[in-house]
View (cartoon, rainbow, N blue to C red):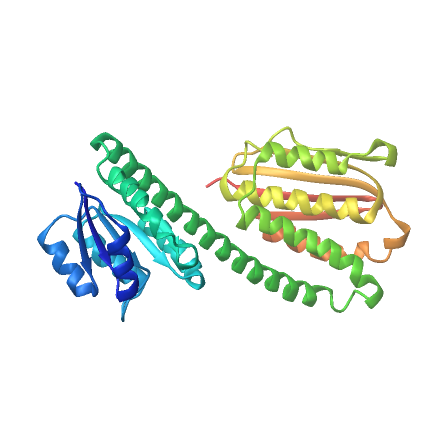
Length: 331
């Protein structure tokens, strides 16, 4: 099949094409309106269409849709202006156009070779056609998945903004009466770390337990600085939302001691009970002199985090020892 249709409302260019393009083995048709082009395609199978990107009142995509409605396998050689490049690229990705030619770089003497290549592509073996069709389907699925991921990321960024607003407003209420202007910078750094942990666990769902605990151990153990943290080997006794809540509490409380305390020994243990799972966080610590006034002021914040991230909780303090006990009820 070697039939080609040239659609062009530029009479001068059309005449030049008629002079330059000679192919005794091909049937060539010409149309100066989209209506004439449709009439040609209604009467015969057209293998290749040479057309501009948009004509009269029709956009480029509208013209392409009309042509592909007549023959989904037609090969398009598309002529475009440089200022339309971005739109043309999108159309190329959507319609899988055979060849793009810029007005500023058009050489009519090469058009015969481009037609031959388009004819060959149209008349390729059925097996190759099926392969190309399958490839296009996969490409379209990939593009759709990419658009979905982009949309999801945008949604998550929107969620992040809402979460940040929530944290800032709640924490400002909790801390407004007890934190001085000089202390706000340090407190803000700690609060921001809590926010990042919340986003990672509950919005981005980055909760690989083994990696999470390994990173936590690396960040919170430093024998040279007399900092020791004993973490549970795993949290397999917890599942689903309970595991996320437990990881969040562990990260926040450990972050509190790592940020504000000079030395500490921490131990976290879990135990199964008849009704669920209990988790103990016990720390013996010496506060950093620079934060001696700030650290105690944040204890109500820590208690509120523990309470909101468990089914039941208790808090105890004696001299340099702080203990948090959480319970997760088995459902």
